[in-house]
Length: 164
Image (cartoon, helix red, strand yellow):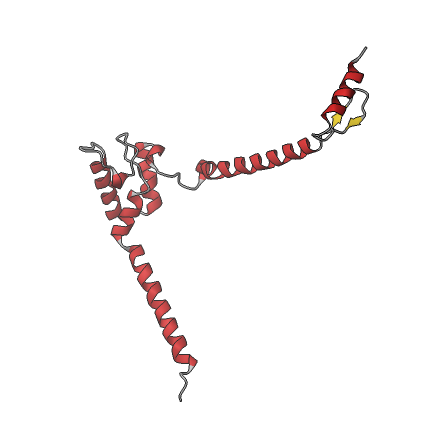
């Protein structure tokens, strides 16, 4: 019996990997996919708060003009960031579905995580402080709380300590 050598199998696996990589990256430069990607990064300004390409507003006065403007800017060869910046300059920053990373907009990405981390840390410190508490009498002597079955002993102690 003949065994297949590992070299042709490696070559076949390498060719298959290269083919799949080429197949995946061919759609990345497609103008239609770029139009779709940018159209989903913007919100229609008619007040419906829908994604620009998904605005289902019947007779929307804004979406068709914005879509035409997006097509025009894509045809002019502008890059994605400059197109998004142009829309933000014309319609305001609320036209962007998510803020562009850079400048002051970094705060919109960073602040929620920082607040969450601070809340977790603050909660941990609070729990640690609460666990360290003990009942202390007026003369500074720590008191241990009796078990749940010792209610009679606790009542007697309270009566003795509160009598004049």
